[in-house]
Length: 86
Image 1 (cartoon, rainbow, N blue to C red):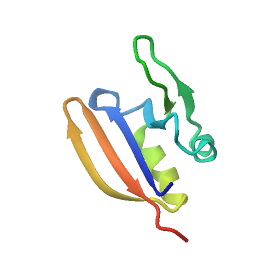
Image 2: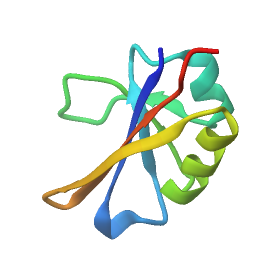
Image 3: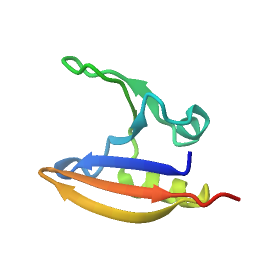
Image 4: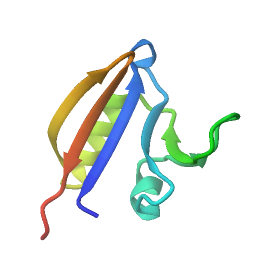
């Protein structure tokens, strides 16, 4: 799975950080210290960690991922990362 999407709300830049959906690589999510959670009222689960986005981005860089885009969507900031095949 070469793409990863992480996000956080702009007012929560100190964390938590959303790191993936329920189909994300569980081994990678464990290395990011992300846990699968389901918020009350949501019909979906997502991986979330308590680290700020900067630390998550640093961890993903060590895993070989590179940022390919970022965007602000309302009060949310999103980064898309890609890891080339070895």
